[in-house]
Image (cartoon, rainbow, N blue to C red):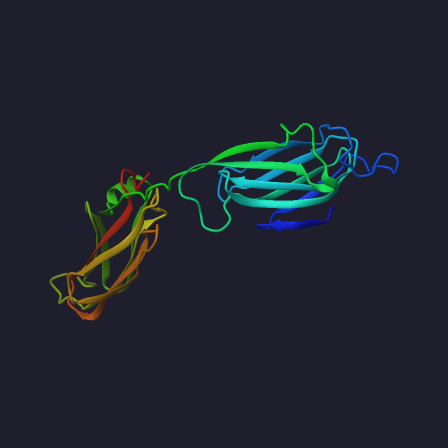
Length: 289
């Protein structure tokens, strides 16, 4: 690794050689009287296609002479210096690489940009005779940001969810009396109902009921294409019992609900809870498939 001075914009510099030159191979630095010749050649200048648009600039000593004070510089659009370094010595056949970013500081506005990399020998008053291969340019484009998708809202349709694999179930939990639980799928809601039937049939006086039922809705189903639950509305149709649930959230609209009826209520009374779920997602996409 060669020592580096004048390093700017946190650029990285590496010098490699295919062989380590012997004392016989490494000549003394060139003087002004040395015949003009090709000394340096740009091997490559590459720019990554995405932010922060990192570049790599590779230069090679194509002469048979040790070069001193090799100046490397990369500019953007011919003005802003985005990387520079000075290699104190570069052996015959050795390469050096300057790395950095084309976007130091603030992000670039959308548009097309050009990096220009230059290399020259500045030590010992040397003038290089062939310099056309000492410079190379590379263009890159900063794209305009993609517009945010237009978001729409809709009521979750349990029938469409069922077609996509959603499962709905109602399980009775009897204590006194026999619960008859049902779950009805409407176009925009589910209706969970628990009705308690008497233990003793007519004409004897019916006994009070005490039952509960567990309902599960949308089990095994998740919203697709970036849709998610944003709100829900519940409505309890009767005061003869109570209910509780774990509400849906995110891309998972599934929930469990329990409806119970106390032993003080008369039989053949029902208790219902309706649930309506509002979902939100990108316009033009299907939340079910």
